[in-house]
Amino acid sequence: MAKQDIVIVGAGGFARELHEMLWNVYSPEEYQFKGFLGQADAPLEPFGFSGSLLLDDPESYQPAASDRFLLAIGHMAVRRKIVETLAAKDGTFLSFVHPQARIASTARLGQGVVIYPFAVVSNQSHLEPFVHLNYYASVGHDCQVGEYSLLAPYATLNGFVTLEAEAYISTHATVAPGKKVGQRSKISANSACMQDAAADSIVFGVPGRQVRRL
Image (cartoon, rainbow, N blue to C red):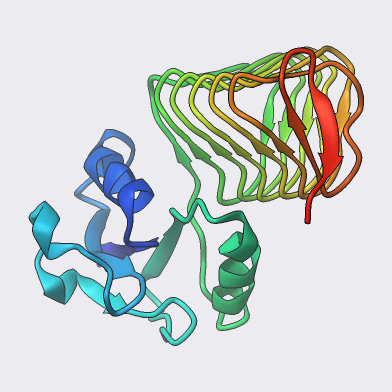
């Protein structure tokens, strides 16, 4: 049987991290690494990668039937756009769940999620498509994490938290139990979100203060 080709969407640090862990998740008997999608000036060669592994810009790339994509872009403003562009060309996305992540048997994971080592998804929680959990990010029980949201290292959602789509929870940030974080909102590093956060807001400090994103 022909192998499927893994294409990492992105060519920065996130993409290089994901590349290093590919064979912890996928079998080299079934998959082979094809390359990265990124801007023409993406700096791959200084990190030991051949320039030939930069296949194309993600918006221009024409997927092959054997391609399987992994989303590795942390820039919140473009994550959705790039996925929708490739999906419109019949691109197929994989999910990545590292074996050292702890995923409850009752958790539900959407298409295209990327979950790093030591992340936790607890009982009855749901990650919608293309959510990313970085190292040691924690999703407590009964949480709902909206599509394209991203939890940075050590970000914590306590039980019954709701994140709407494209929320960003920064490193060591915490959302208190039962609170809701609106679409496209950001909880800043080392901050504690103790109240609901409106859409398009930034929460910073302990306890968190809320301002509207410009």
